Length: 476
Image 1 (cartoon, rainbow, N blue to C red):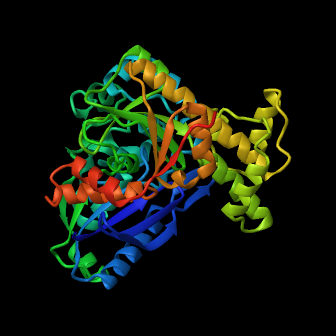
Image 2: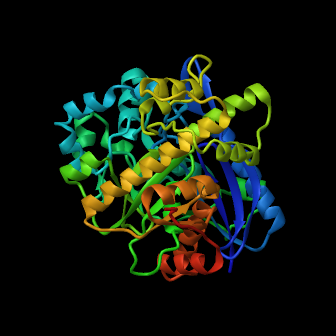
């Protein structure tokens, strides 16, 4: 199979990978830095682009004549605003910034209520959705917002910087709560009522659209030929990950894309925008194959990651092996948190640490505070397993189906303790892997776009054949 580059940016780290569905390697790994400036959180997007170029140069140095395409995926909802010359008009906000606090109710009232918004967009109400970010941007930075001529999701921006071609990729656009999955276009009435200029929102292209070669300057900088094309892969990282769920043809998979977030859901042929669907907290995002990723955002390994970041800042490097051993020793501890409590959304600050929020939650609910790191992990993992079980129950009720197994994919699928506890809590057989689902899905979409694969399903069949999954059965 031909070699391709997958640029995969997650909320904690980024990688540049090169290879194909049979084998690939990470040629460059980096932290996806964010900065707090005068109380606001931003992504260092120029720094991330520099890291991407470093990874591309390493890839082309290793395989100068074998690489045929490049695809980018990132987390959802975040964006850039650029002027008529394509230059940034502001820094790129981080979706965990607090400027959108309280806007869900305010914007919903302005637009005629939540039912109307959900009917038009199918997107669950989360404070970080792009719709609220843009409302806050216009409110707080009106002059800057007025200077903007184009809205670009972060992967759209990075692809633009690589190629000079400006497009909005569909899977990412569908996360904004400004997209209508029924008309397959921007939700123009909502955009109009919020006072956004329609010209901000450009042409939406499907996952797998070939954008073009790297700019001539970049070709020389990274050592690429003009035959290498950049593809708008499934630009939302969850869409890429779900493309690699090793489901059998005709099977409706139940999956969790497990990482900083746990995205739990299934696939539908059409969006489901009933009141019951809205109240269940599920969302309708577009898949790589233009089906609907009907899923629920569950606060994932983020809570664990913030605890570990704090401990490491105080004590030095921790190993996951040590943390797992401590967790298993404390399995009898009965503490458990509601991982979807919004207090756990924000990053650590000196006066508001994640561990302190966990302590407060447990005290408020009459549970003993953790005495050690293992007990903190137990409270988090048990909370996640419980949230999975509740979400699957809601999904089965709304869809009128019963699932027998659960595919856990992504980096979080390496967590064997959580995999087992998820099997126990849900009563389902858990199939864990592939770990690199997002990168593999990115490569599947690129291969499909250039005709190397006949369909997304052919890619999934190859994943099932070439990559091992580990099975966890429920304990009685």
